[in-house]
Length: 353
Image (tube, rainbow, N blue to C red; front, side):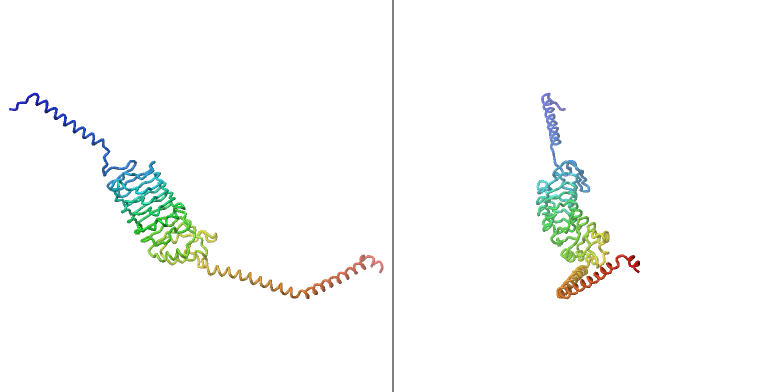
């Protein structure tokens, strides 16, 4: 039989009450604390952990989302106002991401600072298309050791085009296989050489390339593994296109060769480059034709000089001949004048008879 005193019972109830209050306060504090978990998703973004895709579309943000989940394999950021990609823009508290695909198209990016992609050592695809790049640092792509594809379609302004060669000439891009530069109003290949490590595909469609010089064609022949896409360029189909014409005809390095069309001259507009005749791009024939016209002009000039010399050397005889002709004409005119005076009125002569 248990016997409780009133004072002991009161003390027990008070102790239990205190414990419940402490537990409740602890739970409330935990709920209120901004705890960062691996499942947290950046604001204005859509996260799909199963596929590893984080999509951030539109918004007024001027920077890359800073709370990207560590499990992200594909990050798509578009429609933002990110004018500058700063150093280490994708580093989260010094943590490197396992991201393999990064799309930053249509964000108004103008400047890429050095080491902007630091920490993305496993990135395979980088899409910077449809931006307004004015400045690309020589170390912009530093650290992208596994990068396979780089897309810069409709993004390069003239200043950035001049800097692109230096930015690509880095050991960090030794595994780059595909480079896309479509729609950038390029007039030539913006690379010093095409020997960019393991480059297999170069996309240059929809630019302003009119011709390829001997140096570029020779470089293409040396890089047998590369494939170059060149459709929708305004090729000038004249003598300067000779080397490129034979490359298109004899090489399989241009998969879209059938869609390369002439833009000039007017008589050849719309004709596929590979269907031109050899005479259309034969520099030797064109030069011979020009030389023949020059030679004809020289011959005619010599004939004219000889004729003038003959006239000069025979100036005395010519002068006498002209005087004789003049005297003969004068005598003939005097005879006509005399007859006219004698027979001025034929009717008078009839009357006299």
